[in-house]
Structure formats: C-alpha cells, structure tokens
Image 1 (cartoon, rainbow, N blue to C red):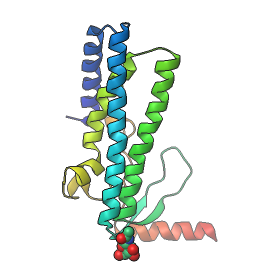
Image 2 (image 1 turned 30 degrees about the vertical axis):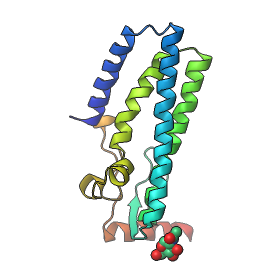
Image 3 (image 1 turned 90 degrees about the horizontal axis):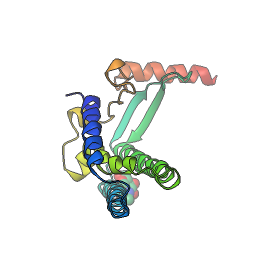
Length: 187
Ligand SMILES: *[C@@H]1O[C@H](CO)[C@@H](O)[C@H](O)[C@H]1NC(C)=O
C-alpha cells in the first residue's frame, strides 16, 4: 500500500480511538501528556544515539550527486559532495529538527488552544515514521544500505501519488552538466 494512504488510514483509526477517550478528564489528559512526552523524548534520544554511532563508524566514503531544485523555486540543481558520515549526520539532524518543530507546534496547540486530541495523535503517528526513517533502519535495525536505503535517498513526494518528486541524480553525465551550469552562473 502507498505510504500516504497507510498514514491516512492510521490517522483515521487513531481519531476513532481518541473519540472513545474522555479527553476532558484531567487524569486522561495527564496520561496523554506523559505518553506524548515519552515518545518525543525517545525520538530525540534515538537521534542522539544514532549520531554517536555514525561518528564512531566514521564512514568517509564519498557520495556525489545532483540535488534537484526545490519545487516552485528558481533555484538550479546543486552538485552535492559529501561523505556517508556527513550525509547520515544531516539526515539524523533532519529528524531531530522535525521532532523539535512538531513539539513546538503541539505546545501551542495544547497549552494555548487547549486541544488534547492532536497530542494523542502525535503520540502514535510518529512511531511509524520513526520506524521507517532510513537512519533508524540502517543504524538501529542494522539493515544494509541497499535498494530503498541506498544513499542518496529518494525524495518523498510532497503531494502523495499526485506528483512524482524530483530525485537526486548520481550518474556522471548529470553531475557534469549541473557543475558546468553552476560554474557558468558564477562567471
Ligand atoms: C575519520 O576518518 C578520517 C579519514 O579516514 C580521519 O581523518 C578522521 O580523523 C576520523 N575521525 C574520527 C573521529 O575518527
């Protein structure tokens, strides 16, 4: 099943479950808060643990690819030269930042606007994306960096199955073309 469809189904199921909960009851709210904080704290510690592993493994194998321009911008594709270590640290940092951003938003929604249901949803939904995160798959679950886990990773499509995302190119011709284009722009 498409991952976006799976997410949608999961959200609907979680919403149904949350309807059975008395989210006005202070005791229930306390449990939901504890659950939420636990899941976020686990995710952030996981990032820290994975980053420590990446630094220890210190894989300096080079990765070179063309990162396509962001959709709806005038930017041109960028040639990226990095190492497995730095690439992985970047991806781990992305997960860390995403988690922090979502916690900030949730703090506002829950503490300022008083909604508890989103807190409940965000205690369960991230478990799936954390489990599917490439860094967790490689560095925690010990999966080989092949196929879907081959670096550079595919960009997720922003609009689900409606639109294909632009993917990083690793072939020599694309790299040459993009580096030429950026050079002529600098001149
Ligand atoms: C990682 O490897 C590089 C090159 O092999 C080396 O220069 C560097 O000191 C190593 N760093 C650590 C923290 O081991």
